[in-house]
Image (cartoon, rainbow, N blue to C red):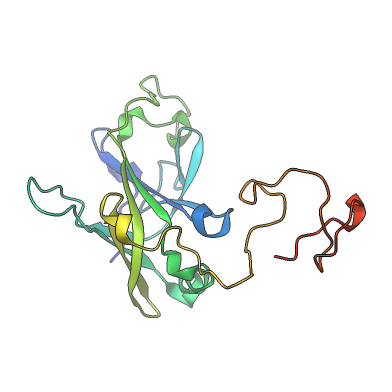
Length: 205
């Protein structure tokens, strides 16, 4: 993928592309935000107050077609040290995670990105319409890079949704979490024995 240019070497008319990988459909917690460059301070990019970590990344195939099926972009990320590969393995290869592509002109970005700390043109409403895809599969992995094939939301309708591995009589949600959805009184202990004692209230999963 090669060495990527920093933002300080670019002009304000540059189009900046950011990516958000939302893994909460899988684990209820993880959201990664990243960008392939740096800001004028040689630090991570900020957009709408959120930090996008600098990470070597290449994305292709977002072009829209006037006819035929929706595009199936491919996103390639650094896997030096196997860090991303290890997390992907723990999260079902990110299958079902939502990948959002965000595009905005550099001149409208948060003032914190600039050496002066001031940007009179900062405008959080200036971004282009967001592109939303879902990770369809991990297409390749080696010690240097890892590659994922994406699917458009319309095209993903026939895939496994949600992207969780279901095991009979096993639930992966944390008891009483937002994903679990239960907020009633005590029902049973961890062995499914009925109880009204809050101290013994557990889920057998």
